[in-house]
Image 1: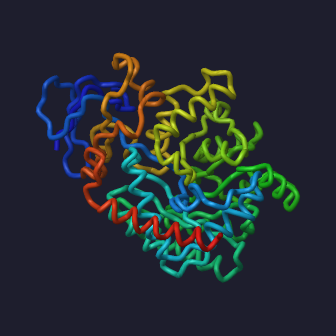
Image 2: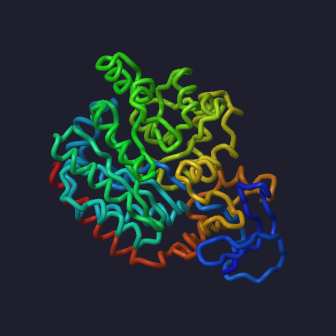
Image 3: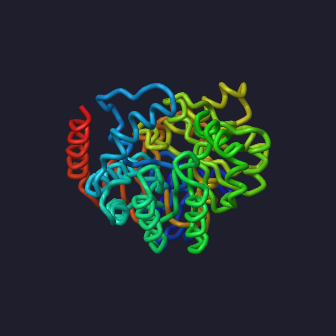
Length: 426
C-alpha cells in the first residue's frame, strides 16, 4: 500500500516532509520519501500524521455523557455519590462489551489509532475483560486494556479483578493487556505491590491514578504520613513501566522523583477541568524530563484528539503565561511520548515503525505549509477533517465510514445499554 499527501508530520528526524509517499508492507512502514506526483492507493489534500495515542481512557465514559442525574461538585463526592454507584457499580459484562465497542470506534474515527483503557466494573461477571478485548479488536483499533482493580468492593472482588488483569497480560497483537489498580485511597499497599509484582513477572505495564484531587493527597497523608508519590515510591512501584494518570497535585520534590524513576505521566486536562481538580504542572514536568503523554479520561469530548490537543495547549498557555508548553510538545504527547510510554514502535512516521497513520484534509483558513503544519494540527484541525485511518497497515476508517464493523449496529447496542442504565438510576 502506498499513501501520499501534501505534507507528512513525521515526528521524527525528518520533521515535516512535503509531497510524501509512504510505502506500507504488511503492518510496517517500509519507506517514506518525497516524490511530487507519485501514484498512491490513498492520497489526501492535507496532512499525514502518525497515529494518535491516548494513554488513559475509560471507555464506559459514554454512560456519563449527558447523564440525567447531574454529578455533584468536588472530586470525592463525584466519585462516591455519582461515578461509582451510578456508572461503574452497575455495569455487567454485556454492558462492558457494548460500551467498549462503540467507544473504541469513536476514538478511531476521530484519529486515535491506539488507546489505553481502564475499565472499572467490579460487579461484572468473570471474563468481562476478555469480552472487552474482543469487542475492541473487532473495530480494528490498537489498544491496551485493563480493569481498575480495587479493594473498595471487598477482598473477593478485589482478587477477581486482579485475575481479570493477569489473564489479559498474555494477549498479543493489536489488543494487549496491562495491569491497573485504582489508587491509594481504594487499595492497600500490599494490594498495590501484589499488582505491580504480577506486572513485573510478565514484563507488563502498570497504571494507576496519582494525586488527581486534593482528597487523594490529604487521605494518603492522614493514613500513611506521606504524600502519594513518596508513599508509592516506598512501595517500590514507580519505574519506567509505570503510567501515572492525572498527576495534578505534585510538589517539586515529587516531580523530581517521577523524573528519577522514569515514570510516565498521562495528563488528562479536560476531565481535570470538568470536575475542578486543577491543572497539572506540565511545564515543570517537561523541564525535569518527565515523559508526559495525553489521555482523555473517558470524557467523551476528549475522544476527539484535536479538541484534546487544542484544550491542552490553551490551558497551559493560560496557567503558565504562554511559551512553556508548545504545539510541538502537545503533538508529542499523543505521538512519540505516548509510544515511548506504551513501548510501541509507533508515534512517528519512520521506516520499520508500525503502520498507524491518520490522513487529514486541509481545513486551514490560511495557507498550509511545512512551517505551520504542526500549529494547524494542534490548534486548527478537527476530527471532521479525518479522511482515513490506518491501523497495523489496514484501513479501518475511510471517508468517515468504519470498514470493519457496522457502526449503526454498535451505536444502537450502546444506546440501549445507556438508556437502561440511566433508567435504573432515575
